[in-house]
Amino acid sequence: MLKGIDPLLTPDLIRALRAMGHGDEIAIVDGNYPAESCGPPVVRLDGIPATAVLDAVLSVLPLDDFVPEAAWCMEVVGDPTAEPPIFAEFRASLARHAGPAFGLARLERFAFYAKAAESFVLVATGEARLYGNVILKKGVIRPAG
Image (cartoon, rainbow, N blue to C red; front, side, top):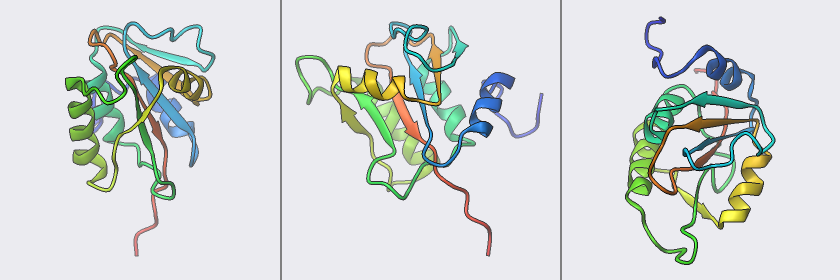
């Protein structure tokens, strides 16, 4: 155990987050997502909701503020304006950890798959709710002063 580090941040996940550079992306995906066949290395957090993993990751990961969008969810197939309840939870986590400047952009299903396939790492969760998928772009930590 480490002080001040969310226990959901396993050694493999901490290593991946630390190894990511500015502009690299991490995909946090639900239990239905084809994680193992997607391409990037996979960290498994089976049984853990995607929202809890998002909170843990955002507790240590800065988001990229040099780009217009740094967080994306997957649009509902057939209804791109639909708002599953998990989206509000994603937005609340973003606001809590990254601030109000960061929104949650949407990607069509296959565009989301393509973006996730280019991620640095993919975190497979046990999220049972549909559309429990989010991609984050890592930012920088600016020196104090």
